[in-house]
Length: 212
Image (cartoon, rainbow, N blue to C red):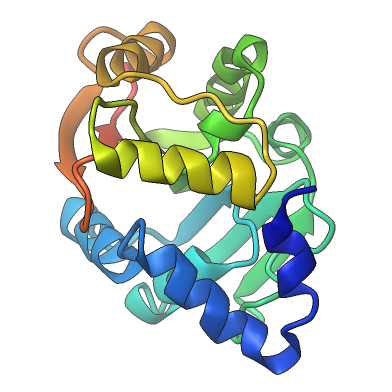
């Protein structure tokens, strides 16, 4: 275990603001969700795969006020720092494969943000295939990753994940990420892309799969 989890357990009521401050060094989640809003209209259902403690879902709930939003993760307590308790928001401790079996073709919008670098390389294609199974016909997948670059910002992000959180991570180059996405969803499935402040390493792909 890295030093981050040990320190966070001791913060008590200060854990949430400390976590927000730490995350903001690497990615502006408000900007991320604003960019998602500019790419899609009013999806009735949204799924976040790898929702963690619920920071993105909290922002999605404020942005898409009519949507039913589900967050799934295999961590101990998905959504534990989310302050929204509305019935339209739910968190499940379940894998993408289990979710795909239970609710196939159910979500017009799926988000996978900064998850893949935590997933073993041999399992990444499978995760995206299960995401494809969960997408409703005509649905959109927003797929964000911290991509590998020869920059100080990338090195800072890598060191934070590897030595502070203690996770064993592997980041892909931009070309690798796009090849993985098009290999699963189709050669012309990347509709657009955008960067998320404050660093160019934050790359999001907007994916509309080929008709299946």
